[in-house]
Image 1 (cartoon, one colour):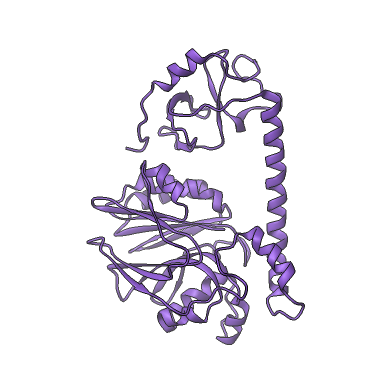
Image 2: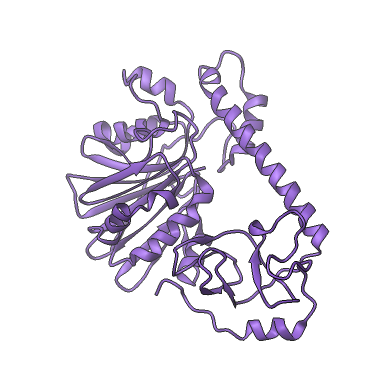
Length: 366
């Protein structure tokens, strides 16, 4: 489960950064970006990736900027294994899983490849779209070709990608909800079974679509599968003689470990909610950023970026009815007491809540 995001032409770099931070939930092992001039990548979260130099690179992108956040499935967490990947004239990023990666790299004698994504760009560089018909798996791929520098290519096969075309720009992301949060309106979702090549002219934003037949997912798989579904299916369907079983063992152990961590966090979250009898604050209201103490407007999705310190205000926001302060659940200790007045955080004063809701919503990055 990796994340892909970006913008084309006159896209606002601040919105692209917001999309990148929202995509951290899909992968925190590595991050990278590329445009028409080149690429930057590192084995770190996207938030840490946004150093001053990297931030300037994003702010001054040429033609388009494509970003990626990696959840390591095959290959170690190293800078070299971060996306984007380049193979000859092709540079791109990938989200998904290539089921016959080991088989393909052995057949084409590409033993130096460590990440399943790399075989996609090898095939695109050497065989074009026809090469992808040899791949078994599910994927979203975005790539550029030095032979056609004014084009950007998307292909979604049993995976996900959403986009929104604005007046003189275009934005895209793996998750349509992230685009809706960043742009303030609905985005268009590419159907997972569409198997259509999108060719985008980065100057005019014209999209040319070409149906691609013959792409393979897997025997028994007819729709997009999450990693948890994949693990269950792996145990049930695969035999001891399957060539990919040994290669996937480390990846499965890694996913199971992360799933266990998620379950523990969810159990702790529910326990704290029940203990404090929290009530969520919906709609738009103002709060102080717990990191820089500046006043911030937060929307009902509770996914905002502080415009002052550029910190992602993750988690749910709750309001202390005793002292007028709002806090992130992540910043409360186990007692669930207000850091300011030490009262148990709950909401009972409807007048104060209504007053908070009078604040008008505004896009923080404008």
